[in-house]
Amino acid sequence: MYPYTFVILALFLTGCGPKYILKNEYSISTSPQAKECVNGCSFLKQTCEKNYQTCLNSAYERAKQVESEEIAVYHKEYDRYLFDFEGYRQERHRWEFDFDVIKRDAHYFDIRCVSSKDSYACHRANELERALRRMERNRPFPPPMPLKPSFGSILSQQQETCLAQFDCMREYDSCFVGCGGEVRTYKVCVENCK
Image (cartoon, rainbow, N blue to C red):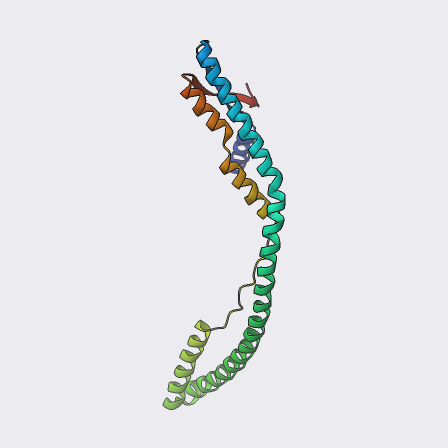
């Protein structure tokens, strides 16, 4: 009982630990050239953020377009799946019938082998057992069902594309350093701080 109490307590305390975020501290000389350069960086950042927001706003429309294309493909795949599944059901029915016949025969010859020590019956029982094992390995499996597209995941993918295209803060930091500035990153506790 004590080990479980310790594990539960450890999990509880881990969940209550401090949480941090990363912050940047910017420093640059106060020369007019540096200020003008940083103003250019700020303008580039604002343009980047507008483009990012435009991308996010159009992500919904792009996602609807992608979804309609994927739904059309899904319907074709699902029709094919239904056709293949009907073939599987027929094959499975034949397989089960054949398996039951061979199993019944194997049982019959096994009983004859044990009761009368008939060498033919023993040989035939062994052959049929091997045939059953082969059939087990070759059991028919149903075709995989296609997955219906999820609008939520499509939308997330479109939004992630925007994030990958427009990393505005990284571009700003790079521009700021290019102006002769320095960017220092540090952690700040935001929750459960002591």
